[in-house]
Length: 297
Image 1 (cartoon, rainbow, N blue to C red):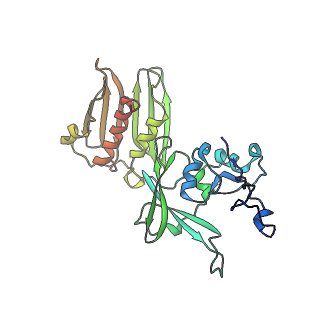
Image 2: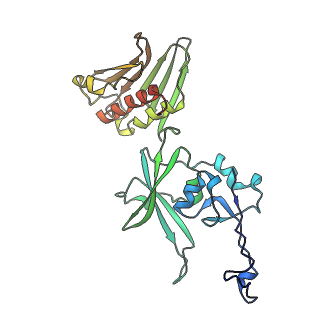
Image 3: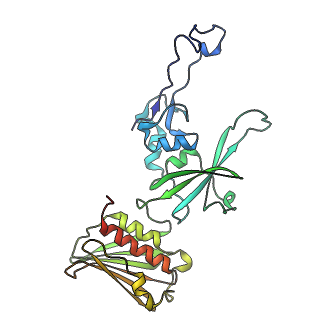
């Protein structure tokens, strides 16, 4: 992954083609190399996601003299991941310029990046701000569109199934004929996926997608589920490929079963607790369906 960005060479003839004036500072000072892991704005952050397309000009200076193999920023990219502190499908990051004291005409000396739950989140200054390097080290989230309002600039981060939901612990236990995956919030079980037929045929992304639908601590309990028995048909995902789904609602749980054409059970998802609203149940069932549907063509 190339991260060392050298400055473009100046034209020998100068900007006017008649040579550099010996009194010009541009004739004697070169431009420092930059690092593709140190973006300074949203557009450069997009380029930092695949540094093969990164261009000199929107990044901070190199900190290790071009020795990328021993670069502390490259090591931190893998060893010091930044965790998004919200269980939300998307997060708005507000960008605040920081100006030096008594500065009248100077540009910003740095930036504070504030993760928020959206445009209406006004308590974000109570949290720890990020740097641009912190955002580069966010794993499992994709950089979304830029955002501008009366309070300033920002951009969106979109969560993917490559990362589980914050606050949801996932544990797996394999047996000879089945595997169980349990989901817990605040040490309370909220869901269980039972995979029949021995070894699982899915990857971690299915478990992560189910965790995204799990309720927060307020809904992690042993109370009745808020959905009703007559919603069985509504809560069952649509058939996909060779698989059919059935949902069953009892006072304290919702069960979604996936079977193939021979009526063999592929998996059984059980949801418990008062946090399983209709929207969350549909999201969990949708995660099962999306996995069985396979990659989008």
